[in-house]
Length: 237
Image 1 (cartoon, one colour):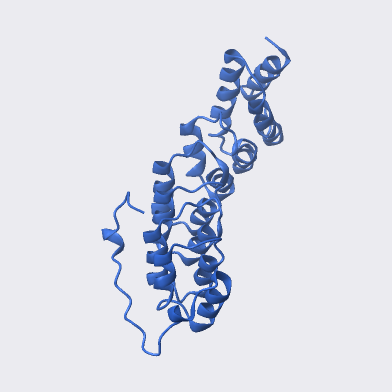
Image 2 (cartoon, rainbow, N blue to C red):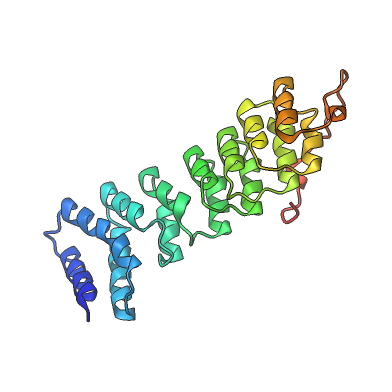
């Protein structure tokens, strides 16, 4: 067993000791991210994961929070451990929700359905957001996470999701500004913008996307079509 393996084994023995103080456990937690990033053999990896399985259940929030900060972005973190941390209190959950590459869309959907604003905002900031999760964030109806998601260049947003956001929240300035901040918008979305945003925002749309004058809002606006969130096809974006 190499130096890393012996170090991990020593940490495991310390955790099993009744004399392990909060400070000691926090210190061990803070080293776990570095340890996971190293090339470990199977025995070393098993020890490291056993340490993590102990720390993730620690009764002290500061210990669990320290662990979350250090292992959140690890691709080697077991999915069940990542999920447990993602469903913990915010001090523990938010780094994992925002950064963990092992959280599945199914888990993210569960988090969205919980309706916790900070958790939705963390999902909206993830490096990559799939079309289905982008759609779920809009359906959740919280304007700030929606705007964050739309501004995120790593978010894959389908036409119907853009249109739904406009139909429901186009007069919310934060969301309208987020939409026009995108590098490009589908033609269908630009058409819907005509009757869903305030006039000053439409002026910005014309300037940003160099639209012809015939797509400016009319004196009499056409009534916007109604969009029923529940009828949006889950896999058609």
